[in-house]
Length: 58
Image (cartoon, rainbow, N blue to C red; front, side):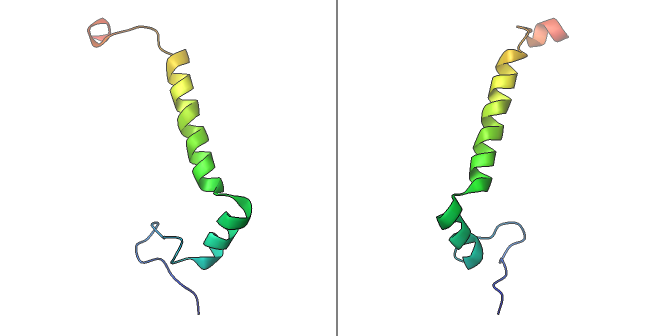
């Protein structure tokens, strides 16, 4: 019998034992990708900051 998530897109590791096993074996690839994307956005934001304020734009 398959375990299905209770809320669409928000499955917990307890609800999806295959995913929990993969995370245990390989690490949480999705969480790592999320952290990398957030870091990239922060770095891009710093690199692309032209020092404009809201008053400069208006």
